[in-house]
Length: 238
Image 1 (cartoon, rainbow, N blue to C red):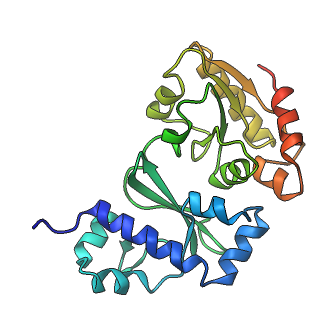
Image 2: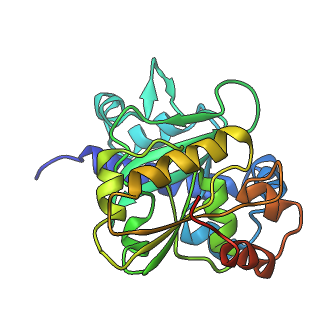
């Protein structure tokens, strides 16, 4: 019989990290401070926690050789790649593509495994919506999904790849609501992306949030779904 593959290793790691989340109150507390509180959403997104120092032993005990863990990107220089990070799995359909880790504090805040990131986050869940909300980060997406805006996807930043641009423009009747950070850099990025998409048949709108907010901080500060919906209705071209 063939041995385990890197995809198998990613699936097992996702399950391991998902179990670890509930064992580490500091990780749950961080999620709650960021406005992510609904257990059903946490389960839906398979959010987990990488405490560090435990994954390799767990995986090797199950028969995954260390070389495979390195090939999958889960181990780097002998250590868990996503040490002390909240973990969001990235899928293409049902296939795990990568893992995103957000540090609880200290070190680089954002980290992916050293493997392709794929396209837009959770695109298989969003692709059939005629209206799509595009955000920068996964915490932005999480609070919007929690509030019922399941037509939200994430570009992992403000610079879209050719694959992500092709995904957005795969149907001519789609409207794209760009909800990036409301700081000067975010506004500039919104306008630049809107100009890029202007050459397609998409209806592109820019969402203005209150000064200093991104979708995550807006909801974490107590905003309601109705208030964000009002921002969508007030969105504009340029």
